[in-house]
Structure formats: structure tokens, C-alpha cells
Amino acid sequence: MMDINVNNPADLRAAGMQVLAEALGPVGFARFLQQFDGGYGDYTKEKYLEPDRPMEEIAAKLRTYQEREKKTV
Image (cartoon, rainbow, N blue to C red; front, side, top):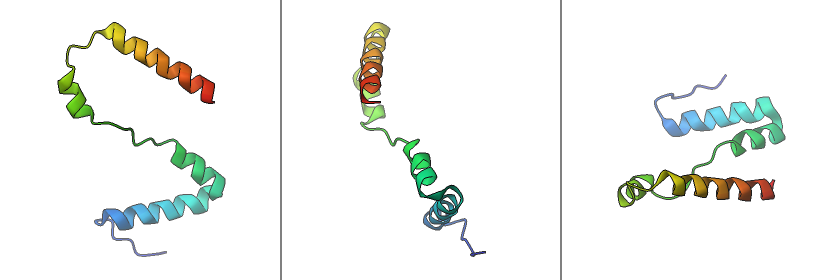
């Protein structure tokens, strides 16, 4: 067993990735990583630019996004 410095985020992340890759295999590991999306944009900045956005507009954008996702699957 390797000695892991749990106080070093880079070491901890590398060790965790190695263990996951060994346990899940290459395909399982890739599928696991695909579950995480870093997102995009600057939520904090956007939140203050449009704080009173109507819920109808947000719902419409969400529906558009969901329809686009259905077409790519």
C-alpha cells in the first residue's frame, strides 16, 4: 500500500483516481468521470446581473436545454 499525504489535495486526488481506475477498469473509470460536469460561466456574476429574471423565462430555457440534450443522446 502506498503512503498518501491526505493533506495534499493533488496527492489525494491522484491516489483516488488510481484506485478508481484499478477497481473500475478503463471503461468504468471513464464512465465514472463523465458523470461530473465542471459547468461553465460565472454563476455569481450572472446572479447579480439578472436577479429578477422571471421564472417563466428560466423554465423556457431549461426546456430548450433538455430538448437539445435529448437530440444528442
